[in-house]
Image (cartoon, rainbow, N blue to C red; front, side, top):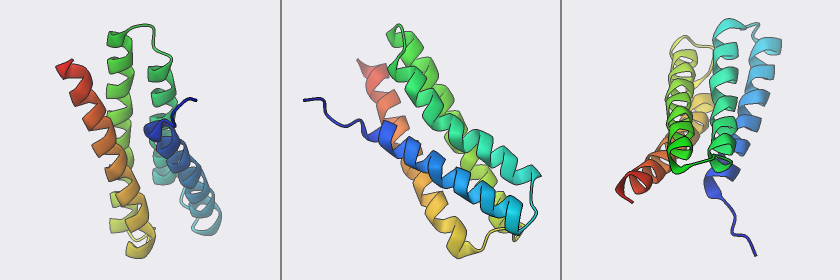
Length: 117
C-alpha cells in the first residue's frame, strides 16, 4: 500500500484554501491585484510539488522542489502584505501564514535530505 505523501496533500489543501480566499477577496473586498499574485504563488506550490514527484531525475526533482519553496515564500509575503494593508484581519491571515510556514519547513527539510544523500 502506498504511503500518503504529506507535502503533496498539504500543498493541495493550501491551494484550495488560497482559491477560496481569492474568491472572497475579489468578491467581497474588491481586491484584485494582490490577491491575484497570492492566487498564482499559492497554487503554484502544489503544482511544482506534483512536477517534482514526476521528475525525470534527482536533479529535476530538486529543481522543482526549489521552485515550490520559492513560491511558498512568495505566498507568505502576499499574505503578510494583505494583512498589513488591512485587506485581511489578523485572525484571517494567521491560519494562512501558519500553513505557508509549515509548507516552507517541510519543503526545506526535503531539500536538505536530498542534498545530503
